[in-house]
Each structure stands twice: as structure tokens, then as C-alpha cells.
Image (cartoon, rainbow, N blue to C red; front, side):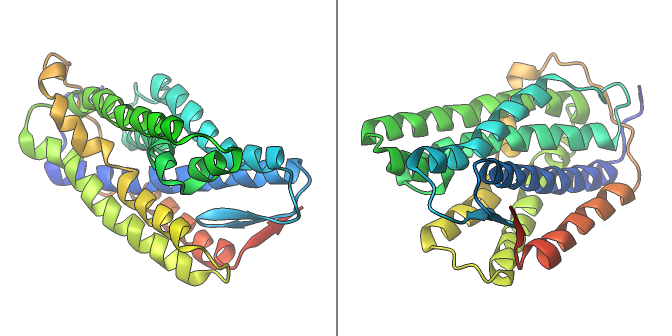
Length: 268
């Protein structure tokens, strides 16, 4: 375990790249689950960087399954990965990337709960399809909002553990990855929408852009719980000056999204 705190700039670079990589992988996995669920139910499906278009005339049950499969998977897999940290002992960049992937996966599920009352996104569409009453949708939204604060509290432990008590290091681990990541992810979401021939309804476009802005918000929110984690033992990360491998992998995924998935990849 590294006992020497990394320079703030190094912590910032690694945190930003890990946040971008984790959130990009999360979205890809999320959409792949949509794709697989559609194909398994017998529907030819086309994968885009921001969603999946299922063809044919699915039954209400099949459509509900296709809508909810990915949010449920993101939520459950994220919760599991938040609890299982096999790379913690190495305390390096890939442990950091694991954390961001786990937390953004959970946040994806939580965000969809927040969107449910507004009738947009996977859960909102499923609620409309099933005729879920308004009060139940509002309850889902409240649960989602509470989940955001719970997730922030969980992230606060890692913030204290790996950024320590110094304010600038805490901001490098939480605030700046959210702010930079939000701007980059929203710009990419806009680029993905422009790169596709698919006509995306306005409500779905808003949900896609909202996801880009909210996926990482648990990180700065974690600073609300500084006192609650004040006794957490500081365990500095051993980070590269620039996480070249992580940055390269993220750039490769963005290129795949733009060049391969932008026009649509059909399966089934």
C-alpha cells in the first residue's frame, strides 16, 4: 500500500479519466443488456451509443422486460461491485476506475427511478405502459432521490480513504471529476445524437442529456458527509502521472460509439 500521497494534479488526472472511463463503460454495458434482452425475446434490435431500437411488434410484457432489464441490471450489478473491491489492495488507477464504474452503474439505476414520475426514460416508459398510478411513480422518484444521497454517503467513505483531509485533494477526487465529466459526457451525448439516423423523441433526448449531467453527481454530493467519515483511515493511491492506458481505452470506446454504434449496429 502506498504511504505517500500523490500530487494533487496526479489525483485529478486519474480521477477525471477514471470517471469518464467508468461512466462510458457503464453506458455501453447498460445498452448491451437492452440489446441482449431484445434479441432473446426474438426481436431484431439495433444498438446505438445512447439506446437500443427494438423492431417488430413486442407484447406489452416483452416491451416491459426490454425496458426494465438494463436499469435493473445496472442497479444490482453496481451494488455488487460497490461491495466487492478486488483491486483495493493494489490501490492504483484501475481500483479507481472500478469504483467509478460501480458507483455510476448504481447511479444509473437510481437516476431512472428519479425520472419515473416524469414519464421519460426506461422506467418512465415502463410505468406508462403498465398504467402505474401517479402516486406510485412519485414514490419511485422519492426513492430515487433518497438513493442519490445514500450513494453519496457511500462514496464519501472512498473520498476520505483515498483523498484524505486536504481540501484541494478532496475536490480533485470529487468536484472536478463531476464537473469535467459532466461537460464531456453531455458533449458526447449531443455528438452521439447527431451521429445517428434514428429519430429520437424530444423527451428521450432530454433524458439522454439529463443522464449525462447526473451520472457523476454523487461525487460532489459526498462532501456533504465529511464529518460522518472523519475517522476513515487515509489510504493514498499509487497513481501514474497520466493514466495513459485508461485514457486510451476511453478514447477507443468513444471512437466505437461514434463510428460503429452511431449509424447503428443491428443484431438478430
